[in-house]
Length: 86
Image 1 (cartoon, one colour):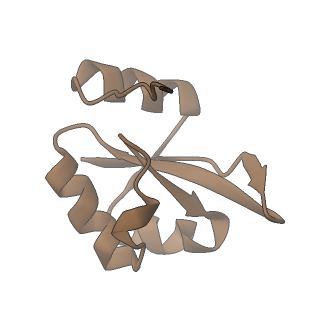
Image 2: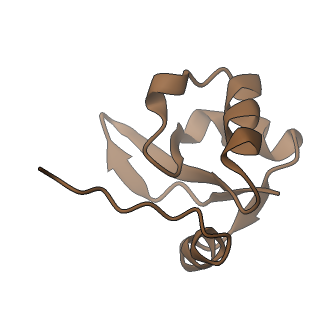
């Protein structure tokens, strides 16, 4: 299932959400592509989605969840990646 949290994070004059899958990265990439989000926007385990795409994501079947639940779902699926700087 694809999950999205409320747009709470501010960047570049917009509010942003996180989009994840709790089953596979292939599902996530496919869903992001249907939203028109480029693959280079992938952030190791999620996509940052501008608020203007929230209603489209929900209409296409993403479930709106609390940000804490989003992280829990990502970890439970074994898909959580932590950025490591070199």
